[in-house]
Image (cartoon, rainbow, N blue to C red):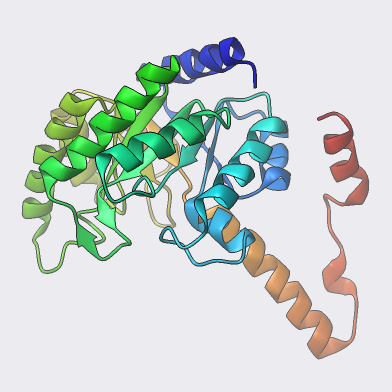
Length: 278
């Protein structure tokens, strides 16, 4: 992507975070899913680290080789005119300097934003200062590249919380949000947060857009907007739905010997049209 066009995409994506209305992001896992989502009229697209990793034959959690992940993101960017935000997990590096180098690489793929998480492979929370240093390194890399990407700082306190209470998790999230925003983050993502009262408390206390991960049982988009949520993303959910549907159809074919499960309301002609226009 031309650098000036990428800067415009990043500025466009940043403007979508003004909290005047809720931004809904579907998370793509390959070029095909990205093109389908773009055709539906979304304002922007995110990627899912889990879905991308599975499509490349690896587990989630930075198990996929970084070069393959960046190539997949580049293909996603190529097939959509929309801003793309990359789920960049923990930055794929052990040090802030390594994170900065990797962020420069993913910026070169054409992204308008990234996620950076403070958990280590869904197992341990980084110290808040260490996590903030990595965000600061990512912001410095973006400034060096001249692309004002949106950095969505993911807080993993609800998936690596151990025996912490909801109040303790909220307090920890607020402490981390303050540090991450000071380091250069633009948006805060308390992944797996689901209680409406806790969502409202964080949205009120955090002076920045808050991203909530979609999941069954959450209030609907209108209710989330009323709670103060600025951004909702689907994480691995759409990739899991797609793979689950394919698995169910294949299982029915195997077990019944019938082809009824292969009927698709959005099939070859429609998909060809999308890619013919890409």
